[in-house]
Length: 122
Ligand code: HEM
Image 1 (tube, rainbow, N blue to C red):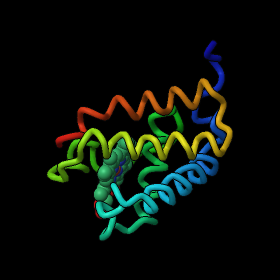
Image 2 (cartoon, protein in one colour):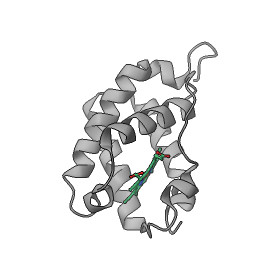
Image 3 (cartoon, rainbow, N blue to C red):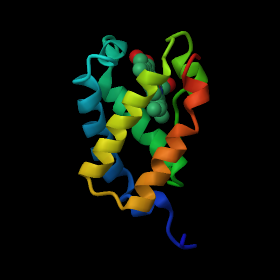
């Protein structure tokens, strides 16, 4: 049951832990030839900052996400469902590796999955 006092962000260990998961997540993304070409011209340091802010804000953290909205950020990329699933799978693996509790792990993935329609075919 969800406690009134802690947010998922806090249970994940706050911004520092989320950043560690996100850094690992992008290691997997960049090692995956199905999707790494999308990030050829991307400043991955900036990307890690924005992704950490994004996950922090959607998990209830006191963090403002300063990037573009999800549809605008992926507009014109032609991302397929298969590619979306590959990226979500790398986040899944990174969350497992950092031993995020099962409930929080599932909820983070569900939160991310809710952006599928905005990202796939944007
Ligand atoms: C799984 C859910 C996803 C989430 C939550 C997500 C989140 C984000 C965020 C927060 C940004 C930063 C936007 C900004 O800086 O304004 C971004 C940019 C980007 N995303 Fe995603 N993304 C997802 C899936 C994908 C997929 C499936 C691909 C490609 C296969 C992708 C490729 C990119 C690229 C190339 C950028 C732009 C980087 C740049 O500005 O150079 N994303 N995404």
